[in-house]
Image (cartoon, rainbow, N blue to C red; front, side, top):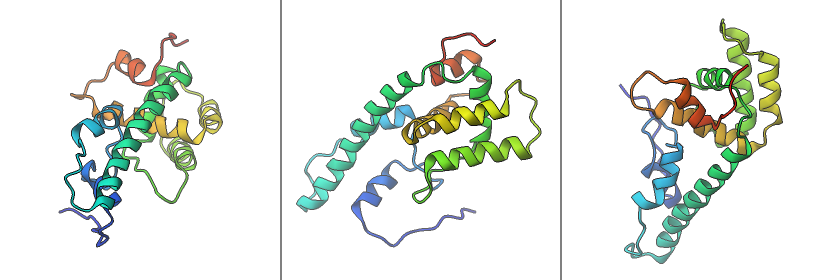
Length: 176
């Protein structure tokens, strides 16, 4: 049984958002999803209402600009995390959903802090160091971390290798 809240709002931006919803009340913000959004939903001015066409086109443009920003930000945070930290972040943010009210950075920090505090983990990761790294990220860099976590869980199969993690989190340095 699905427990989803349905909105009665007919806002066309909300409709555009639902077009690439995962069905779990969160946007399918993966690198591939953002990159291909405009291609998948090639908005041609077929909608009779000019305002509706502009809104849908704007949504596609925003997705394209976001994809570009994500690519550049992933380069910015290259080698910022170790493989072990990246895997732990993925565990901490498993099931993470974006929130329209709360800062992404704040929510990411709280989720990781709670996981580290209340879940017995045995990884070779310094909790304080990981939280320091998260707090030093910008709001958009935290958004990109969430996208990388979703890329991690979007991989086919259930066996993710260290090489997969390195590719997703842009890690080239070897762990200590």
